[in-house]
Amino acid sequence: MVFSSNIFLFIFLPMILLLYYNPFCQSRKFRNVLLLIASLLFYGWGEPFFIWLMLISIIAGWQVGLRMTAAATPRKRKLWLSLGAAFHLSMLFVFKYLTFAATQLGLLLQKDFSAIQLALPIGISFFTFQLLSYLLDIYYGKAQAQRNVLHVGLYIALFPQLIAGPIVRYADIEREIVSRQETRQDFTAGMIRFSYGLAKKVLLANYLAVIAMNSRFIAGQEPLSVSAAWLGAIAYTLQIYFDFSGYSDMAIGLGQMFGFHFRENFNYPYISRSVTEFWRRWHISLSSWFRDYVYIPLGGSRCNRGRLALNLFIVWSLTGFWHGANWTFLVWGLIYFLLLILEKFTSFTDHIGIFGHLYTLLAVITAWVIFQFPDLGQSLSYLSMMWGQAGNPLFDERAVHFLTSGWLIWLMGLAFSLPLYPWLAARWRCWHSVAEPCLATILFLLSLIATVAGNYNPFIYFNF
Image (cartoon, rainbow, N blue to C red):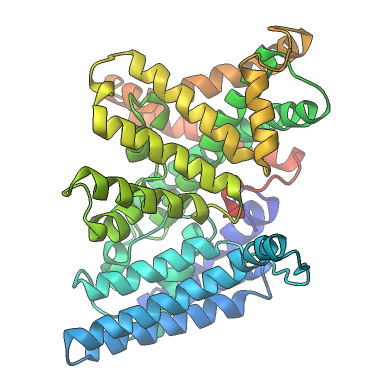
């Protein structure tokens, strides 16, 4: 089930809200149990077989957390943490990476391991990282182990952020699980935020996806012109932003409607003046997770240049492979590793002013080309078309078609990738009281029309 589907918008969400806010039973226990059951149904709608995997992971994490708390010595606490982390990472490896590893081993040994084919459970990367953060927060004393397994289950399975994040830290919502306060102001703000996210997905990302998919398909048949290739790459750059930031907006909004407050996951990343800044603004929950739980424990940047380079290499290799079991994701991660090393060792972005925007956009668009193709050969072929090295023309009718057939989408995509919202909110006195609710209502209605009329189009990050 996805947030932009008819069954979610017209059946699942209204029913859960009616039951959650019913006037007859308003206890915290009832509401938590309702949300947990609803979350399991939400996940089971798309992955009925893999509910058991998530339940086993939840129970294992709950038990390890209790054992760490009861451990008599720091050594035993560390042992339990190691066992818990090994268990969850092993589950992630088996279901996400074993097929890939077997294929690569088969190529190396010239043997056929094609029988090893495991389906990828939706959202396994996200709920595994949340379980790891639960154990690590307990280990470092940032949170207390939860004695009620249902509360751990609710933290992991809570449907707004279950499938594609943002990655929520247990320490951030520990108190809200047992003592949150639902308010009319939060509910209204959550509805508005959800409407914005839904509009990003169905009014922008889905239409930009058509241009991006067409450009990839045509590039596989014949060379695109330089302009058409760039337009396809830019369309994907905008698509993945509106797709994933739209999901995050909907998740944050839904959480707020039920009294939870998740951290922001995007902060207008395409206005960045460096790749370093870009990763402070893009998928903040993932980049901060790797920073706090991998990069800093490795030594962070408070070390010599050789160790700093090693730390960044480890982090960005893991970041690449976190996105999927494919060499293209590793290459994508290593591109950012090289760019970040260049920026940290030279600080050249501090001296190029406005050209930092251009440099960052070129780097990000190029990296997204690597990211979106399943094969490195296809990525390099597409990049050669973008830079005119494939003998392709500079401009043609297809580029004109890409531009003119969706000129309004292009205009809106470029405009809303900029911080237009905070600019309006700061300058228009009646923005929050009048203009914003009206705008959100219009966008929600337009999104409903597009959802009813459109086809199923899953979120990109469902694959990860």
